[in-house]
Length: 333
Ligand SMILES: *[C@@H]1O[C@H](CO)[C@@H](O)[C@H](O)[C@H]1NC(C)=O
Ligand SMILES: *[C@@H]1O[C@H](CO)[C@@H](O)[C@H](O)[C@H]1NC(C)=O
Image 1: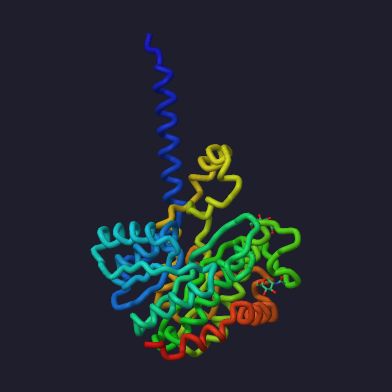
Image 2 (image 1 turned 90 degrees about the vertical axis):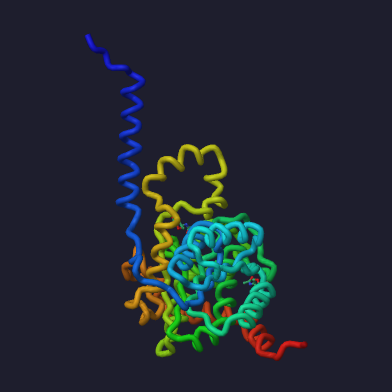
């Protein structure tokens, strides 16, 4: 009599399920952006380009022939990733440049150097982000998540706006996520010094991203600078490194559970490519896209007064005008 070998039955069951999960992940994981749309002759800046979506977006831009500036904090890691991208894409026009979004001085130095090297900027991708960090402040004294995810990018964009306008048609892509829907702007205490909650601070920063995209888009109407906010969906990136949940043992339980529905970073990066290169999005004025489809952001995110308020506070807190003035002064020899 033939008796099924139990270990083999279990093993093939497991293999089949893993296969099904992979298939599911591929189907669920979103579609790729049109490979035929190239980026030759375009200069791109990507913040947070050493890992996750930023790394994959940089790879894709390089593959499509763009000149890519990776704006990063960790230069050793950046160089490692840059080499990998150059080897794989055969595009040597990929550069690492120091830029710490937690410091206005670092942002200004980055812009200063960029402008001295490059006359044009076609695409700015505001991607870097931190998630659910412990209570803390940036070098300029802003709550860490709002400081890096919003204020840093606000200043970076403001300082590059003249170059973007000169290079029109050009684009700004702002990476946000669905957490903006639960976000509130804590007008009375943006720094969240009282009752700091890492998740609420993250949600606030992601709402700030959408508000910024909309207000910038409105201001850029008719200038040829398109602005798009994108939600890459639930992806498997380094962002999770800050999540307390992921640090503990639970990680080994939670991670496999979510793995099938988490997008691979290369897949998640496709929404950035779409916003940066799809000819139909050149007229985007702060629109919000999820999985390459235009959708309405939360009601608060559409609050024009709130967006304007945040813009004014951001200008003041980042001392954007002072930095702009310093940049436009001729450099001492
Ligand atoms: C938050 O911090 C910044 C920088 O230190 C400061 O200018 C601002 O007044 C603070 N705001 C609040 C509401 O605490
Ligand atoms: C933050 O957003 C997440 C995702 O939308 C939500 O589950 C959570 O309840 C929100 N938390 C706070 C404190 O706003």
